[in-house]
Amino acid sequence: STGLAADFQGTGGIRSAGGIKFGTDTAAANALDDYEEGTFTPSLTFGGGATSMAYSLRQGSYVKVGKMCYISLRIELSSKGSSSGAAIITGLPFTSENLAGNFSKAGMAFANNWYGSVAGTQHHIHTVDGNTSAIQLRRLDDGGNYQTFTNSHMDDNVDMILCMTMRTA
Image (cartoon, rainbow, N blue to C red; front, side, top):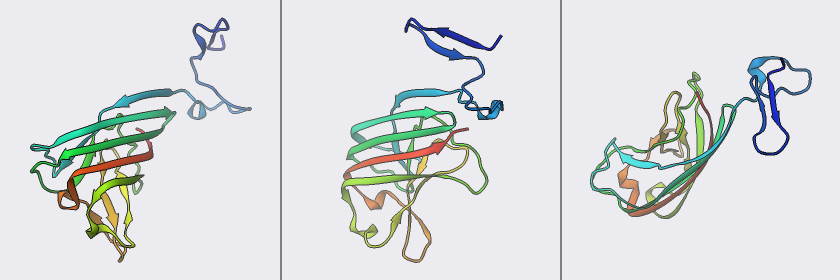
């Protein structure tokens, strides 16, 4: 048996118990054996809390091929509430792979109400650390040091748009 089950009538597609292998490669580790699309609801916390936070919009979507997952999300606040501390986006659909010294980087655009205190030549370096399902909102300052975004960097009606690729566990 080849492990191949096919329905050429278009009702069930083509399925392979061992995944799809290309060329002469026979290694199971190299087989494409996972594809998924879906949605999720991201959340924002400050110092782990979200006291009195109110959203105008929260939406997320993903496409996962093998271990690679492309994520896009948008969070609009109507009130950031009263929690304070590090800004973290939670609720990602997958946990990241736990690779020593490696993390996934997220690119983010802030549509409005991002305070001028983070302007200039500083770079946004939002990351998903290994073995987590949360995005740490960080920046690289002019001196090359990581700084954490906090509630004090955002206004009540901040609008965040993020796209990233991460390796999943």
